[in-house]
Length: 199
Length: 177
Image (tube, rainbow over all chains, first blue to last red; front, top):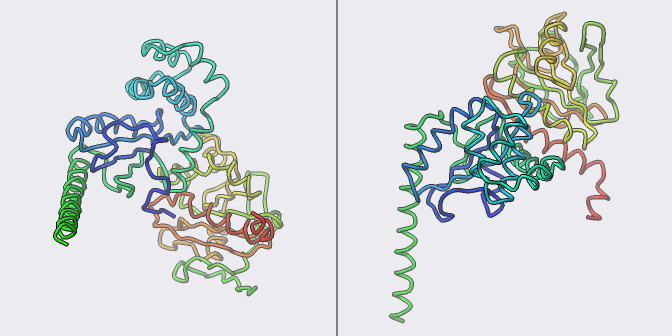
């Protein structure tokens, strides 16, 4: 049964790009070894570039490890890089090298982005972030995520196709609606304080 | 509990058997030389899901998703059973290819008979619907859901149903919390 709403809102626990008060938040549930996620990656990058500060992008892990043998380790590697402040560097490295996602390549990407290799290797060996990855996964399951990539825009599931033009149109609509709503709220607050001042 | 008589000519017009119905027992092949009965699982919750066919892309996502969730289902001591009209050899190849760790039942001969008794057979297509039944430890359907044929229904409904069953079973524990 598919629920249309996100059960775990995007918050400080999440890896995000863009301002926290952006009018639109795009959340992706993804799997680094999933070809559809690989295809969506440049689309998301182009949306981020086009929308700038109007968009906040968040990414959560949804590895289907029984059909994608590297997906779980890759997700944990991104988290281990995140522990060193380099989540997005690893994220970009993985989605631009989907043909080379095994442990040896992870070490290369980790070195290339300047990670403390000892800590990175230890985190992978001890599966330090397996719990975090599972938490992401289960938050997706409880929100009706049934495959990857699944997107949510401001907490509502996005059902459209994953091409740039379609996603941009929907995001623009959400941004405009949020800007109008903010203006209405601002006007109401100004009106209230004006009345207060008159009294 | 009311027991609904099994209608061998049951069609999807009646819809999936609703909550509160005794789940009709069945015996189906899981591999070319193994058969299971629903009654084998008495005493534990059973997740029985029907899907139209092995290999089709949406089913692939659904069977793969449930595969990932086996540890969660195990926490509820629940058994997971998939069912389609595909033959046992087809299931064997599909399960091996997708690395599935739960049984796929072959509702193959007479074709779709179990799907019919559960009200989820598509006579025009000759396959079952995409439908889910969560059956309690006494063999009574606790929750049933019919998904649009092309839509992977996810697992949130299953987990909600299992949580409800767990809460019913141990109300004292819940109260203590």
